[in-house]
Image (cartoon, rainbow, N blue to C red; front, side, top):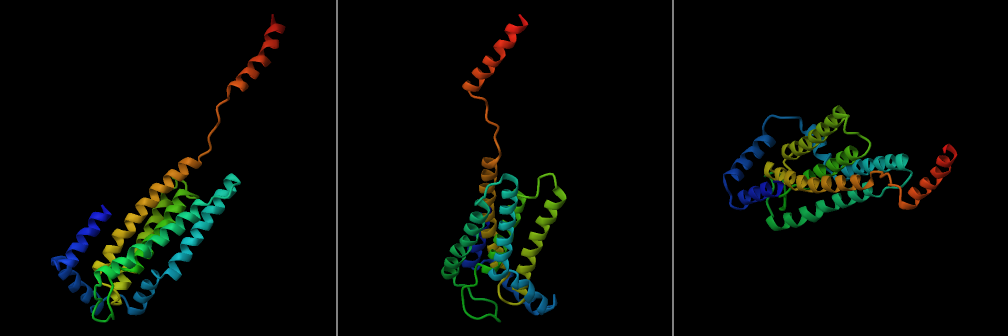
Length: 228
């Protein structure tokens, strides 16, 4: 779904379709018209900076690692590996696409290569993986209120970053929408991986083997003799 939507947005961009024309009108209006104060919008856009988002992801991975070790007595590497792989995928996806499409920015921006938005992709993936790690670890399924609150916080962060980037003239709306698709695709893969990892790590009660069964039968035999 995310890949198909990204392909559609990209087709509209390259073909200069009606969605691109609407995108450019909306981008100029959000930048030049009434809206949040620019200092606040700048703060929101900075939340997508890797220097802000990546430490949040690292703290989440460390917290889940500590939680797993406290519960099992073993060091789990999957939170750190998941976080590292996911955040490295972002530049691997975004940078080549920026070079390929070479889209100009808003009139206030300089240079080329604004499609898709790197800051939006970073925020979507970093905060999203942090959320998935918490949901796979210390936040149990029955705490639906907490899970909903964390999910709403993630959505709010991504929306704020996206709005700030457009409001400040750093990106067009289509740039951030494309990064939502890329980030969503990455998060879908991460969610599947985490489900499999958690299922594999569930404690299993070993069934008694044949030797144990024979020992139990031998222990019962004298008792039957005494009764007889």
